Image (cartoon, rainbow, N blue to C red; front, side, top):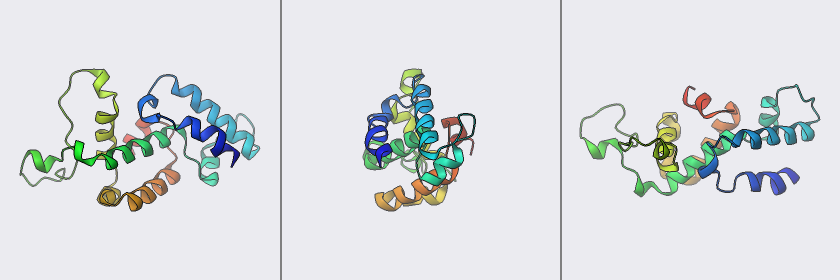
Length: 156
């Protein structure tokens, strides 16, 4: 309870904007230190299983959750591939990424949200029309995998 009231609320504030920052590693180390104190484990032990047992999302998993909820809540600002072309492909239900050449835009919430949403398992994507079901399924998926990085999620 203390973790969620003091640490988690501050950590998640505006996470979709700073979650890919190079400074996020410092926050992640602080989060792991807090988990080690709560669980009473040594500093060289892995926290991954403790995150699962305590039902706490690591920083990057929390970033993924917040980003995907942003996409679902603002669905009208995103275009689906089936709106762009009418060819029946397996990616027709994916969100269409805009063409951009600036890395600043690629690191932004809009573009990153599309990339992360398109990497979701299909059974979770189908739930995106109902926010509560989507959030519950996504949290269960993130709890079981406990991703430590965005690349780990994208390669899953």
